[in-house]
Length: 288
Image: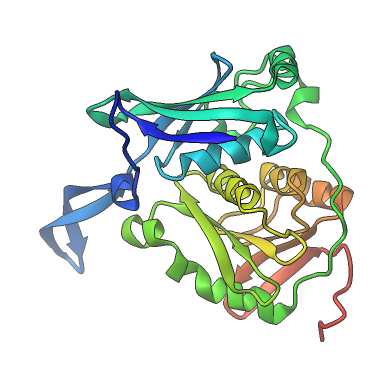
């Protein structure tokens, strides 16, 4: 898979963390007093996924790590089955003068996958809100979940270690307070990879993309997300072979049902000093 860096005409540009937020003047009220101040505001731009010249979806996303986003989304949505089915990936700014105008991700995929994508006839604009916008039928809305290889439940100490490291590994969230994070943690709970985005689904797709690009051993760890565990978060995790999903907030009923069907370990309300095991695929030998 050839990934070409962001293009704005001829020059190449790298979208850094600094490009993902801007400064704005605000009026801050605190303890009965107001004062003028500067605040850091997270950027949110339209990102179009275009497969073999046909626009498939427009997402609202943070403009960083878009190569990972495109690969993770393509895999978790079943558009491709393996990274090798992407031939080329280009990032092109709609307006060379402004990121706010949006970015096109032009993805070249195999003919077989392109034909299958056309047959799906889906329009997913607005996906970050509900995850099902544009589905043409109930059958499309609730897709079958892919079973995962059962893996031991992470030790409680590992879960707590991961939670303790999450905030320190989220620079965009620290700066803006408006971004979700999705992290890959090793079996000891240490965060090894993390991706951020204004959308929780996008953050997870970005993580799934970088895990694939780096050929990460998915049997050696678990995913941690800074959001609730919705149906789609469980579906995306299982579709890419992740055996354990840990969420800072609660799961939904459908997410729990799908986790049970997939054999996915599901942990929610992961906070300092506590977490809740909602589904356990296999008992960890090392757990007390």
